[in-house]
Each structure stands twice: as structure tokens, then as C-alpha cells.
Amino acid sequence: MTVVPKIDVRDLESVRAAARQPDLVIGDDWVAPLGESDELNERRRRRGLLSLHRSPIARKIITFNLIALMLLIATVMYMNPSRDNLAHQRAKGLVHEAELIADVLEAKLQQDAYVNFLTGDGINVPETIAGLDLRGGVHVSVYDVNGFEVTSTVGNTSDTLITGLSRPERSTPITNFLSNMWRTLANLISTSPDVSEAQAGSTLQSFAGDCVKKAMSRDTLVCSDISDGRTTFVVGSPVLQGSNLVGGVAITNARGELDRLVAQEREQVLRLFLVGIVLSIGLSLVLASTIANPLADLAAAAELGRDKNARKMSPNKVRIPDLTGRPDEIGRLSGALRGMVKALYERIEGNEQFAADVAHEIKNPLASLRSAVGTMRVAKRDDQRLKLLEVIEHDVRRLDRLVSDIANASRLDSELVKEEEEAFDLLNMVSKLNDFLGKEAEDKGIEYIADLPGEPIVIHGLEGRLAQVFVNLIPNAISFCEDGDAIRVWARQRENRVLIVVEDTGPGIPSEALSKVFQRFYSERPEGQFGNNSGLGLAISKQIVEAHGGVIWAENIRPTEADVTSDPLGARFVVGLPI
Image (tube, rainbow, N blue to C red):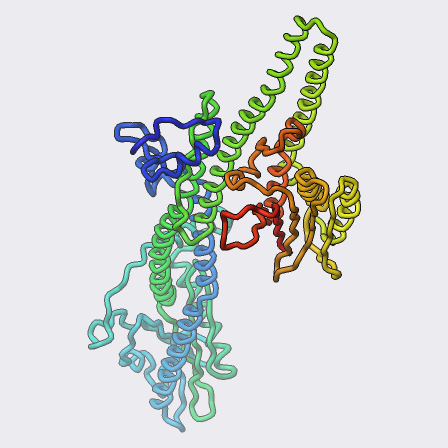
């Protein structure tokens, strides 16, 4: 990194010229030399995914993503039709088994013989039921026509002997944990006493007897019962001898069988969502890091600049990280902050330059005043004293004009921001100025020509401020003209812009002054007009025009544009404004 040896901070052009040096690095692009502590880089090194818990944005991203996922889980678990489907399929299977057992009993009956299930007349019910190969842990009970239980048996609970049907029992730790939590909470709230397995079995047998009695009065009937968090199906089917009712069959599924199947299905869903939660947290952390970390860098850079400026009299450059390569709002924010910081530093440097120029301009009349006052003390003749008083009066007027123009220039920025833009007819405003200022030119013997279109041109802006621009340009042209010269003010519309031109037949502008006429306090005046202008009029005009999104420039009028060395025929000031 190279350093320009001489940079005058009071000279804005000196600073900008130094910034244009190819090897010079300042401001936003400055990189700390090796070995120098960089607080922002140190914060970045200490930062990681786990440190995002200190970021409110990161916490919100993770929280809202988890809330959405939890709501999805709750909705799926609540509306999941797997339990209903399993219950329906199991109930259909029990119906088929109950009707099949009833058909077996009916096939054993003799059509004309007396049948009594309880006494064993006509059929040996226990022997017939014992001969059935029942599976799945179902409980089968046979009742006589009066509803007394004749026999009962429980099917084999193992399907391992059947090829292709056996499968390993899947564990359900997540479902069991949640179920135990729910059961514990329910027990804390509920006041009903616990029911033992024996009591539950007795109750279930009574429930099965009631179900088969109802079935014997109509047709096959499915009854369901939920107790102790377990679902049990009972299917009752009548046994007929021809058209006579001789008994009934009740078949009950294994206790908790359906709940185990549902638990296994829910375990699959919960494991899937558990993986989803882990992935959601991980992706949320990555997403949060791409949002929170850059924002933290931007905030930290601004805070470091603020804290350093608060601790030291000479403020350091605020180095905003360059994230403009990101195609999102953070990239836009980084670019906006960098542009804002750059504009602020340019404003600071401009204010420093302005203050230096003001001090320089005020020193000139003050030095003249000091000299005149000192000379008056030794002047003896009245004519000398009168001459010195004229000098003092001229310098006082010059100071008063200078201070007034400086005050107007310093307030211009804030007033341009505060005032509200309105639509107005630009040509009507210029026409009124022509009527007023044209008389001043004619009184001086100068021909004043106004060439404006007949149709109005409406623009949005500050009418009073734009009028100030032409109040500066037209009298400026009058001051450079003499008797017999001419001034022409004309306007033309060019697509989405309008050009207003003020040109004169005066001496023109020196070539070396064309690039300086809009600088503050620069004045290129004839000898007789020294001290009558502050040199701020054109600078203020340029500031107003640019605040409206327009441009202003000065040029000489020449006989032919091909010959730039020919004597100018006059000066031309062009103002371009958007429509």
C-alpha cells in the first residue's frame, strides 16, 4: 500500500485526486496491515453456528420454522386416517371369523334334532370349538340361546409357524414415551381408580355377553370398547338351526392389538418428523447464518465507527463490509450503507472545504479593512480620509453580501430536503422572470430576446428554487454585457427533458475558467466589478439543478465548432431538467 505524501484535508479536490491514485487505499477499501488488531475480523473468527443463539433474528427463524413443523406434526397425527383404516380392517376380519365359526357350528347341527348348547344335546360345543385352529390371540366364546356362556377359548398368539406372515416386532420408544407422558398427565387430572387386568377381563366378558345377546336378536353385530387407553372389538354372530336361534358366537380381538399396530405406524411418522426437526434446525441455522451474520457485520462495523468516533476527537473511517455481490436485500443494504457513508464523508470533506473557503474569502475584506483603518490613523488630508472611508464602506458591503450568500448556501441543502415538490409550468415561471429582468437589460442598452414555446411545459420541482437559478444566470449575463450587446433566453423540449438556455454576446468565458465557474467563491469579473459578487451564485445554481435531477454547464459561443481557437462570440449557460 502506498501513501500520497501530501493531502490537504481542507481541499476537497486534493482529497478526491488522492483517492483516484491507483495504488492508494482509503476508507471503505482499507485493509488493516499485518499485526494490527481488527475488531471486526476478531468477531468473525469467534463466531460459529452455535453462537447464533445470541442473535434475535436467528432465534426467530428457528422458532418459526419449528412452530410450522410442529403444527404440521400435530395436524398429521390428529387427522392421520391410519388408525381408522386399521380398525376397519380388523373389525372386518373379526366379522369374517365370527360368521365362519357360526357356520361351522351350524354345519355340525342336525336339522330335526333337539339342540341345547348348554347340555350338549345335538352338538358338543366345547369339542367343536377346541378343534378350530384359532390365531392372533382372539378370544372366542359360545353362548346358548338364553345368553349363558357355554365355552370359551383363546387363539394362538404366535404367527411364526406361517411362512411369509411372520415379521419382527418393531420397538416404539418415542410413541411409548409420549403415551406414558399423556397417561401420567391424565392420571394426575383424572380421579377414577385404576382397573386391574382381572377386573378389565371380567368387564370385557360382560361386554361380550351383552354384544352377543344383541346379535342373537338381529344379525351379526360389531361392538367396540375403549378402556385404559386400549381399543377392543367384539363381534357377535347368531347360530341358527334352520330358522331357529340356538345360540351365539362372540369373538374378541387380543387386548391392545390394535393399539400396538397404531403405535408402530405412529412411530414411523414420529421418527420421520424427528429427522425433519433435526434437518429443519440445521437448515434454519444455515439460513440464519446467511442473514444474521452479514447483518451483524454491518451493525458491528457501524458500531465500531460510532464508538471510535465517540472516544477520539479525530473520527476514523467507518469501513462497511462490501456485500454488494449478494443478489438480495442484504446486498442492497450493504451498498446503500456504503454509499451513505461515502456521501457522509464527502459531505464532511465538502463542509471542511467550504469552511476553509469561507475563512479565506472573509480574510480578504478583513485585511483590506484592517489596512484602511490603520492608514486612517496616519492620514492627514480630508480627501485621503474620504477615500479610506469609501474603501471601508465597500468592504463592509462586501462582507455583508458575502455573509448573506454564505448563510443562504449553508441552508440550501436542508431547505431542499424539507420543501415539497409540486407540479408547475416552467415556461410561465421563466416568462415572468423575462418580463422583470428584461427591463433591467433594456435600461442598460442591452437587447433582450425571449424565445419560448407556446405550449406549457409542466415539471415537478421547487418553483422558487428553480427561479433562483435563472435569477442568478440572467443577471450574471447582463453584468458581462455592454451597450449594444444582446441576451437571448430560449427553451426547447427534447423527449423526456427540457433545455433552458441563457446566452449573451459578451466577452465569453476564458477557456481555463470553464471548469471553474461553478466552484464556490470563484469569480472572473472585470476590474470595475471587483467585490460586487461573492462567487456563490453559480455554485448554488448547480446545487439546485442537480437536486432536481438535472444538469447545468457553461460553454462559449464560437463562429464554428470546428475551430476551438477562434474568439468566442459570447457565453452560453444550459440548464437541462427532467420532465
